[in-house]
Length: 291
Length: 296
Image (cartoon, rainbow over all chains, first blue to last red; front, side, top):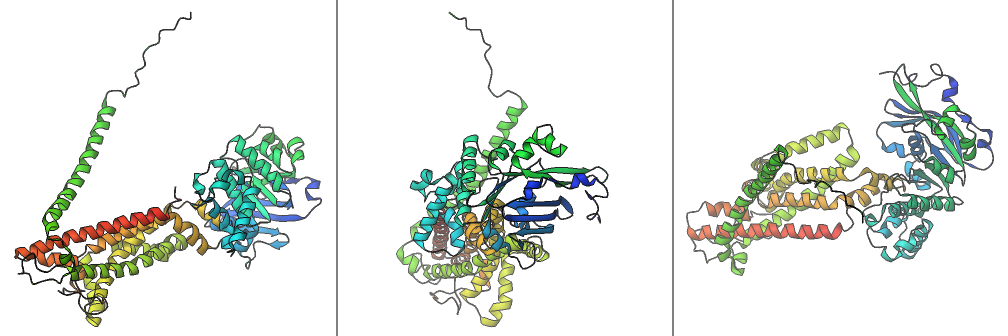
């Protein structure tokens, strides 16, 4: 089926205002841009999951991606460290620059990208290894063999993830024996152990109870002075609690061809998105009138 | 004083009727199936122990194989035990690593490409090839050129084991959750690292079980050895040259013999074979438990 070019949400069929995001002026203000996402469309085989997303992500800030299911927020997140490469048939159009360097040119190694841009997943996924080995995994695959150095990295990372006090006496126990919240903090510690520049979080709290969620949110605020964080969340309160900027994505349906695609609707400072949304769709979503 | 309201007694027992009946029928069918499976196994074990145990002694385990006419208390199965261990060990060394690597290719690297599909298909076909065909195959490509040897037998057994190892390992790798792979990739691991440090350890228990199934299958095979190792009566410590012998081959020969002594030695050989297979199983379980302390 030859329909990829003009099927879904191109401006010929839909009003331009629906495809182009409303971006408040101060979204482009001060600070270094870690990511410069420029007109990115993501495809799974011939299905266009996301259309024409452009946004800039700022250093040492927490940026939240919100929106309903199927709006492509996770897809965009996974393009930021090339995790989408692992899905057969996935490809990206447009350009993403990370600290000025394009992520999608031929000679870029996804391995090198992911060493700088870590990811925490929706479901805690500790390896079937000991707590210590889970955290030491990243440094080890990067060639760190020095025992003392590894001990230090493990302690620092576990402290950074606010888990040290709970597990310091059982570092040799299985990482699978931890509770959901602990396991997720272990995964965060594992990510911090390789000292990334950016931490991507894909709904890191959706499987956790409010107390564990609170612990992880505190943690995010604490570490953002050293890292740049991008978080996908379904929980709008969470976005208002932790994030500095918010990007609202939505699903655009094309009734004619019965297709749908995700678009970035509005991007700006979190207070502005929630208190003074410019786009009626954002307003409907953040006030709870639309799912 | 508060009046306690009269409450109707709830009946929480399983309701009578077809559902309960069918539940009982199926439960009993399962018990029956279990008995049907276990009874023959029990008979085989008991018979072998009863008829074989009395002949087993240090002398039986170490002496050369006497002529069939010799009475039961003369000679033993030493050469066959040595041969079985040599040949099975060689076959395992060849087939298990190759099979595991093949399965890794199929599941981790091949994906949906045509080569992986082709290999997977032919590996499954190979599972169904009769063992005697494997023996004849090795006979034509190896024995005709280099002569009979334990190594030729190991080649034939290896061919039998290979598809079993590939299939069982492949299924185990498929069970490793993708979330683990992604977690490793997200730390900047290469594909090889992900496979070596996360996927294989997570699947280790099942891989060892599959490999043991293959070994257990191979250790009891007679047909592939008929054309590849022949039969000898003295210990051949060199598996790479000269004819050899094995417990299954010896059981086959002795069971066909009309002499009481030879038949008794045959029972003894059968018991020895069962014990060897059993010991291998236990050792493998032990190793697996040791290595998969962190599995779910």
